[in-house]
Length: 128
Ligand code: FES
Image 1 (tube, rainbow, N blue to C red):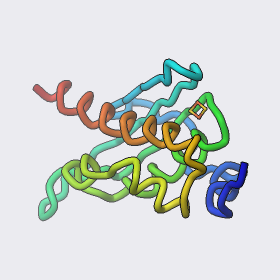
Image 2 (cartoon, rainbow, N blue to C red; image 1 turned 90 degrees about the vertical axis):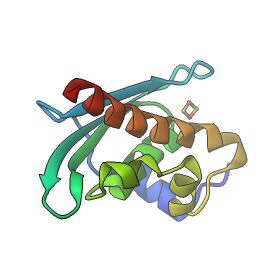
Image 3 (cartoon, rainbow, N blue to C red; image 1 turned 90 degrees about the horizontal axis):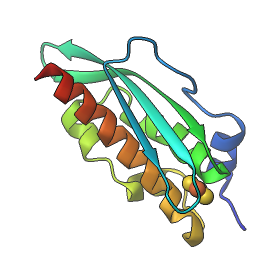
């Protein structure tokens, strides 16, 4: 299987790995097919001009190389974004930022965007 340089970079040296204590929101998703698990933590800060912004984000993932790389990449993509902007990040954005994923591995990036969106929803639900 051919992985891009970016995937290998993020797999071998993942960014923003670990847990955030007292996170504003946590999203967890699992892949029923392979059993892999991904957890995304966000810390939200209010910005006078931009509104609610993700100022800290991290992940914990039990999974394949693509799952680790997509987790790492989504934390880079979502950092410093408003919640609205982060909700618009798609699995295709994650795959593109990683310079592509092998077609058989596209489902792995699906976990990353779902986990991010779940973390945002968790934060919004807690605020209600
Ligand atoms: Fe399970 Fe990649 S094989 S997420």
